[in-house]
Each structure stands twice: as C-alpha cells, then as structure tokens.
Length: 268
Image (cartoon, rainbow, N blue to C red; front, side):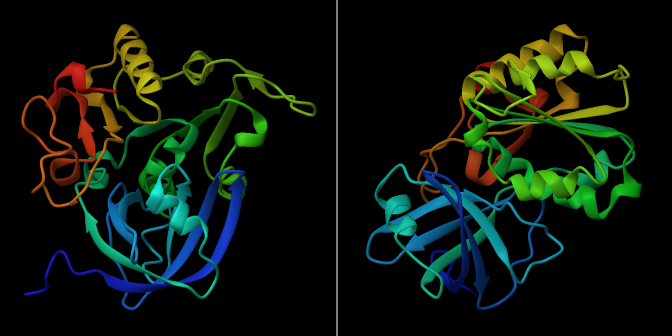
C-alpha cells in the first residue's frame, strides 16, 4: 500500500504570471493524476514545507496539472521562486469534488470571486468538454480591479461554450465592463426556480453574501454547492485543522459541500 504522506515528483513545465503575486504552475507528475472536478492536491517545496491547492486544469488531461498560487507564506513564496525545470512534490488528489453525475442535465451557475476562480475551474473545464450533458451554464466572476483578473486565457476559451459575466469593484482605464459586486450579476440572469445548481467559491464574505442572496431569491440550500477555502495541513483528515462545527473535515469530506449538509455558520 502506498504511503499517503509520501509525495510523488512533478516537474514544472511552465510558469505563467497571472498578477504581481499570483502565478500558475503547469506540472508534469511522474505518473498521471486522475481527479474529480473540485478536488485538491498538496504541493511540497522541498526543504520548506507543503500547502494545499485546488486543481485548476481539465480532468481530461491528467498528465498535466495546473495550480494557481498566490505568494502569501513561506511555502508559496518558495514555490514562486521556482522556475521551469524545477521539481516539486505532489500528494493527492484529496477530498470530495462536485457530484457531476448528479448535476448533469441541470442549468449551472458558477459564482467566483478573486482566487476563487481556481476552485471551480476544473468543473468549468469538465462542462466545457461535456457541454451537451448540461443545460444553460453561466460563470459570474468578480475581482477588485481589472488588472487582478486571473486565468484570462481560460475565460476567453470558456466563452465559446458558456456565458461569462465579469465585474470589478474598481474600474481602471480601458475597462468597459460591469462595475459592482459579483452577486449583482445574478440580476442579469433569467433563471428557473428549479433545475438549476449553483457553485460558489471565493472570499468568505462573497460566499456568505451569495448564499443568502440565493436563498432570498427562493433557491434551496440543496441547490447550492460551495467550495470552502480553509486552512488545511495534512490533507487526509488526521490533524483536525480544517474541522467544521459539525465535525466534518474540509480536506476529507469537502472541500465541496452541498449547503444543506453543513451548518449555515460554516458557509463562508
């Protein structure tokens, strides 16, 4: 039996600068990593430590794994210093992702804020590749300023098969799009009361506002899925660092939860 704590090696095949403090790493692991949309991996910077990251690439391309990383701590800063050809360690995939088989045939609305786009990207790619299996699909994505818009290359590709709505809190020269909260974009959609599923990922306040707005609009908690971004350490439910108030673990039972399965106070 493989040691769950033992990382496998992966080579960095490319690095993309997203913003001044966010980079996307394209990794080629020593063996393909097959994962479900919404799952995450642990990445090691040898000699420094490891941290969890959402898989942002397509599950139909398991030989290459993409993760987008913001430099906020020792591990992420060490990863940001790495270049093409360097080697990292990978554990995983871990956690429960989006139940795609249950969602097939439904309308789907993604609501993402900031780096929350990483948590839903693999599911968007799944739908992109299996577009005929779903009804209408929308992506609502908001950032503070246009210069902080991440994974622009994906956004452009996704427009071919899904409807993408973008917004910013503060406009910059050249921005002609929507200005306001990402939840304001919901008012632009004509959605049915049933047969629609929502997937949320982003800052805690955005998730909370989106959840309560959807509930006020008449949607049930069982129609709303959330990918929770909480501190995780071991990735396999042993350390207890990411436990919710009902005893579930984000790393093991999530990171994707249907909102009727967790206390409302944990939806953030």
